[in-house]
Image (tube, rainbow, N blue to C red; front, side, top):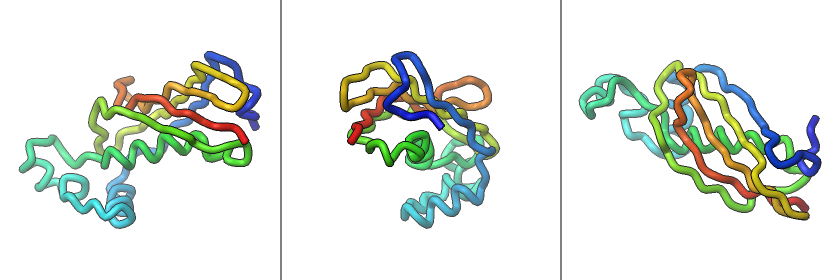
Length: 132
C-alpha cells in the first residue's frame, strides 16, 4: 500500500466504482434524508425534464472522498471543496482521481475529480489532507 506521505507532486490516487445502481441511490436517500424522487423514480425524473434518475451530488462527492479512507492512520481530510460539473445517471461507471499538486511538511493538496465512462467530469475540486 502507498504511504500517502511518500507520494510526490504529480502522482495520483485512482479507483473506479461499480456501475451506479438504483439500490445505491435508494440506500443513500435513506441515509441522507434526501428523498427527492428525481433520485429514485424514473417518472418523476422525467417530469423534471431529466432523461432518467440522477445520483445525488453528495453521493458522488462522498464516494470521491473514499480515495483517502486507506490513509486515515496517517492523517485526515482538513478541507474539501468541489463543484458539480455534470450529472451521474444509472449505470454510469465513475473513475475517481486525486492528483497531488502541493505538498508541505504536514499538508497535502490534491486536485480531485470524478469522471464518467464517457470521460466527462462530473465533479471536480480540491482536497486538503493533513498529516498527523
